[in-house]
Structures are given as C-alpha cells and as structure tokens.
Length: 374
Image 1 (spheres, rainbow, N blue to C red):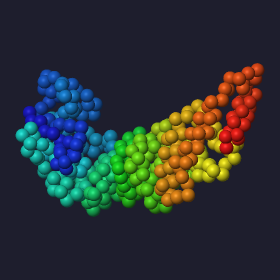
Image 2: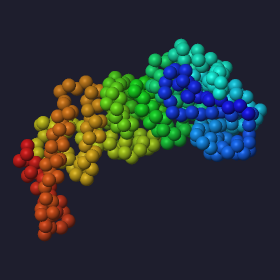
Image 3: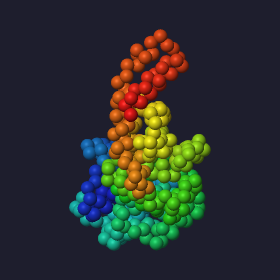
Image 4: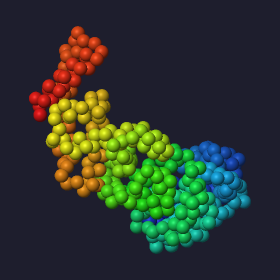
C-alpha cells in the first residue's frame, strides 16, 4: 500500500501557490483494508475515504471506461492491481496529473511539470474527449491560470466534444456549478472566451451575441473582481449583458432554467434590468417616477437589495464605458429617498382604512413626502 498526494495540491505547490484542498490516491489497497485502518467510506461512484483524523480525501487508484453518453457514462474499476500511472492517465490535464510521495519525490509520467514551466494547458490522453465536463474545467482553468495557453490539440478536442453534442447530456446544475466556480477567478471573463472559441457558448446561450458584448463583459467583470464582489453579483453582471433590455418571460424560461441559475441571481438580474433606464437618468426623474422605481425594485420590503442592484448597475456602466452616469451619486440619492420614506408613520396613515384604500393612502403619503424632499 502506497499513498501519494495528487492533483491540484501538487500543482499548486510546484507553482508556489497556497491551497487548502489535499487529495490523495492509494495504490495497492482495497476498500476492506481502508475500512480496517479506520478510514470512513464516502464515495458513491468509486471508492473514496476520509482520513480518520485529518478528514482529507483518499481515493483508491482507479481506471475509467466510457460506456454511455454524458459525463456520468463511465464504468469505474478500482483494485490493488491499478498502478499510479494508470490512475494519473484518467485525469484531465497534465498539470493535474502529477503525484508526490511522502518523501517529496514527484511522479510525472505526462510531463505536467514541463507544461507548468512552459505555461501550457494540455490534455493527458485521447480519452479527454469522452467527458464533456472537461470543456468547463478547461474554461475556468484558463481564467485561473490566465498566463497559460491551451495546447492546439487540446483545443481541437474541445471543439470535437461540442460537435459530438455531449454537452446536451450534462445536467444543468452541473453546468452552473462549473460556471459559478469560474466566476470566483479574477479574470473570469476568459472562461467565456474559451467557451465561445470551442462553440460551447453558442449551445448554452444561442440567444447571445457574444462578440458584440465581449469587451463590455470583460470591463464589467474586471471591475467586479477588483471590487471583490460575490459570485451572485458577478453572475448577474454577466447575464445583464445578455438579457434583452426590454425583458421577456421567454428569456427567463430558456436561459435561467437551462443553466439552473439560482433564484437569487435571477431576481437580481431582473431587478437591475427592469430598473436600468431609470437608474441611468435618476436626476431627470419626477417624484412619482422615483417612487414607482422604489416599488418596482421592492425596496420597502427588501432594502438590502439596493446595494446589490447598484453594484451590478455600476459594473454594467463601467463595461459600457459610460462616463456620464455617476453610479455612486445614484446610490447616494436612492439611499436618501428610501431612508426618508421609511421614517413615515404608516400606522397613522392607514387608520380607519382597509384593503386597496390603505395602499392608495400609503402611496399618496410617500409621494407627498418624496416631492417635498426632491
């Protein structure tokens, strides 16, 4: 029984990067032996165990064979006979197919260390074409290691995967997971460049003219990364560039459902899109228009939404290179209006009224207060 540190942990050590995840592969052992040693089995599709003290993952060396379409269409074989090289060969790219033993010796049968030095993202074996998820992994690795170039043959395989329509068999939830991880990278916009170049983006978002929005997406996501915005905000920033500015139910159904976009991202995108034109010309709006905007953004019930919407709005404006709109001033004014309106005593306003009359009375009182303020 031999244990090796593998994957991203080894890659990051070689590159001088810090990383928390530590995965191990176990060669020459069995599930029974691992359990006897105190490891806790957690793998459903193949034998993976948690160390009894560190809780790091230890997987038995295994091979995979494609038996059906899709990213789940693999038959896994794990036994004492599977070698370290055979296990590494099933991995996606060479820089992730390096192992290290407890003495610090590297095992690099596919020249991953050389590819790290030359800054190349290259597939390990022809079997790479069998797993459609690897398109998304390559895309987000390109965003993370933005100085690396994808090997020509690897890019050809990405196009082949798209041509084979294997992506259609991937669960939308899995696609969203890969995209959401990619949004965490400083240069997340590069992920969409790769998806566009191989043709995958056209399958995922046929409604989108990527080349038309490429530069503005880049500027917006760069600003979001610099501002350390959350994944949800970055995702909304991306979708607002693809969303028809007039908004349609069809877009919501086709895109958000197709990509399993979380409800929070969907609502944030829709609120920003529906408010976009008003936010751009906040200084020109009359009091009733500002009040209607506050209602439309649902800020009385969800005041915290304002900051997120304004972050998306500001990043969008940065992407459009629109210097005439000062997002910070817009945010300051909206906060002022909302703070002032929330001071109203709505209980006294709604006394002796019911139903629709209460709503009308509250709206009238808010409009009167806002008119005086403006």
